[in-house]
Image 1 (cartoon, rainbow, N blue to C red):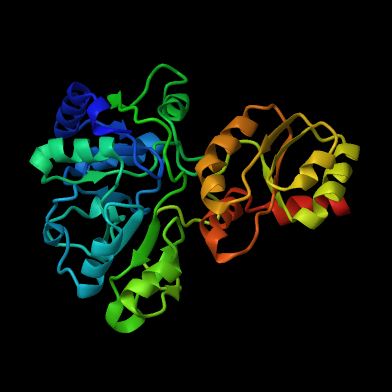
Image 2 (spheres, rainbow, N blue to C red; image 1 turned 90 degrees about the vertical axis):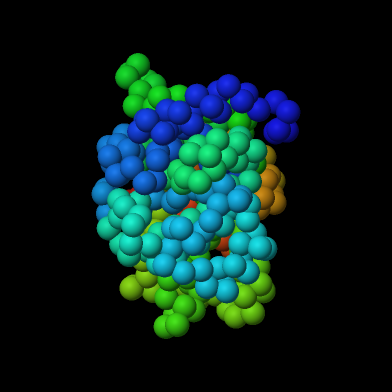
Amino acid sequence: MKDSIIDQQAIRLAARKLEAGALVAFPTETVYGLGADAENAAAVASIYAAKGRPSNHPVIVHVAPEADIAYWVESVPPQAQALIAAFWPGPLTLILPRAAHIPDQVSGGQSSIGLRCPSHPVAQALLREFKGGKGGIAGPSANKFGHVSPTTAQHVRDEFDADGDSPIACILDGGQSEVGIESTIIDLSRLASHGPVLLRPGHISAAQIGAVLGVAVQAADAAAPRASGTLESHYAPRTPVLLVPSAQLADTLQQMRQAGQSLALISYSTLAKEIPPLAAQFPMAASAPAYAHDLYAALRNMDHAAADLIVVEAPPSDPDWQGVNDRLRRAAHDSSAVLAGFKK
């Protein structure tokens, strides 16, 4: 999207709604966010209520490109400054020790806070208008907790407007999200003891981050801060999802059809061309960025197919696919149990 087609009147209206304590849905390059004034505890609480989100599950605070990061945290270590210079604006969230004056609702009661500067021009316009660019917008994905994240304004409407009683004051439409999966989350709150720790993979890889910092990024440990989108079951459509390796795809589909199951399929390989017609089928690209771009749209599309199961051909396990595989693993967290039931 180009700045010239941004609806400035809509941006101003959304900013005023946020400043008044209301909820606003807005686009980012990753997914659409459900925004509230990050310094208004009651407004942040309304995010949790609208989503049905556990109060101890932190949200990410979005800030403008010119924002003073030091306002939000106890200190800005050199590692954070290096990652900000390399990847902001962009799909990278930094976890840092939260400043004492920032309400702990945004961090789920933890002493840390997640910050990110989105690159989407509509998000940036909103952040610059809101509180004169000096505020922060708490913005988890604009969907009910645990469901598939939205990548279009229509997805947000489908999620919250079904009963005609939406908790959202307005929705800014910025087209389809370019990246398609949520931001990478890096914990920098325990550098002295743990170094940089990857809490959630995304478009920006651990290898890219390690190259900037000059040290390897560590895997999440048991004592790591809680972070958005890291529960075992997450990003899930209402229809059960089965994640099946390519080599087992044809046989698994045949077994399920024989068991009388109506199936929807999401696949990326040419193997799918040899499979008989199903209730629905969504062909995906064979590159990780293109696959990520379409992933949530595919899950939502197949969720509307009235199938008993959504079968997903497991993508490659290469590092480039880490973010996609993370989302699919959580969306299909009970795949092994379902598959085991078919093999009995």
